[in-house]
Every structure is written in C-alpha cells, then in structure tokens.
Length: 255
Image 1: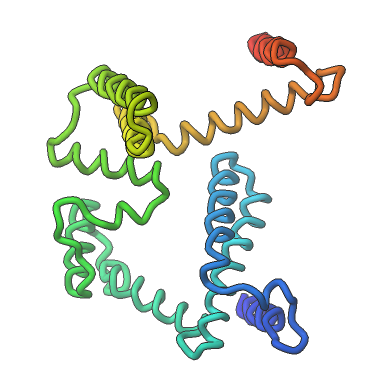
Image 2: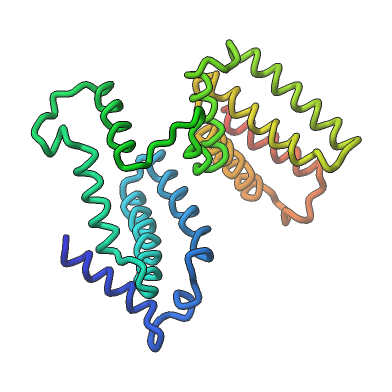
C-alpha cells in the first residue's frame, strides 16, 4: 500500500513539474480545481447508489486525485504537504476515538455522540449556535434537508407532509406573483420554492438529494430513448412529434 501511495504522490508531483509537467495541471490552482472536486464527489456518490464497486473503486481514485492535487499545490507554497494531511487526520481519528484506542469500546452510540461533542469542544471546534453553520457547507439541497431535520429536533417544523405541501403551494403562488410584478424578487422566491420542496421530501421520508438524483436519471433515460426511437434528427422534429415520442417512451416503461 505504502509503495503505491508513494508512487502516486510522485506522479502528481511530476504533473506539476514546471519544466516537464502537464500544461493543464500546471495551469490549475485551488479555485480552478473546485468544480472538479464537486463533480468527482457526485460521481462517487452515484456509483455508491448503484452498488457498482468497480466504478466506486475508480471514482474513489478520482476523489483521491483531487486531494493529492490540492496537497501538491499547497506544498509548492510551503503551506502543507500530503504527509501533513495524513498526519493531522490520523491524530484526529485517534483523539476522537478514545473508546477504540484506549481499549474501552463498550460504549453506547448515545454516549459516543456526547463524547464526540466534548472532544470537539476541547479542540475549540464546537459550534454552539442554535443552528450550526456547518449545514451550509453542504450542497444546497443537502443543506436544506439537514436544516429541516435540525429544526424538527428543535420543535420548529410542520406537523405533517400535507401542511408542508400547502406551504409549497403558497411559495409557488408568491413566485408567480414575483414573475408578473417584481422581477427583482424572482430569485429569492424561487429559492423558497426549492427549500419548501426539500422539506416536503423530508416529511415524506425521503432525502431530496436522492429524489432529485433519481429524477435526473429518469429524465436522462427517457430523453435518450426518445433519440433512439426517432426516425428523424431530433432537431428536425416538431414539438408535437417530440411530445409523442415522450409519451411513447413512458408507455414503453409502463409495459
């Protein structure tokens, strides 16, 4: 394991060599790489949902590539190295799991949560605010879900899904009004619609990120199939012909 990891670190270093490295890799910085990190994490997420372990192995490597690239960039500026990253993580895992490394793992899950918060407080990393800022570090749909879960624990929530659906309908009406009367408010109202939709999903027992992910895959599958069964170039089809193809694809799936 150590041999292959060391080789990989050297490969990334070679890609960033000012004289012989790759022009694309040399042109990157922490900010330009950020979209790729998000993309690779989502691809890993999708592979896990599919239980495709060959794909998961590859996607884990792609995520690791991003970690190594950011570490190499920092190392070039004498900020930190991949060794520092590994050392910090290892020490943190040991520090936060005394029940494992002190030989006392006979502890309840509830007590583990209590201990975890105590340790984070000792580290000076505990957020004592009513609604922790860490939720905002997630992708927006995930953040909406986590915010809703936390406010539910704090007893600030709708009683059932039907009440949230009414709220969603109200937000949609406000969006319609903004579109017709106040364009400056459209973006904010659209956000309220999406936030409320995420809470409907939560109340129905689903995670909105997984809901939307499945909907994206369903649309992609159906749209791709439309192209496969069409006897014309897709751009040459009229809207009515496209709608017929869409209906035909849906009928196929029902059968």
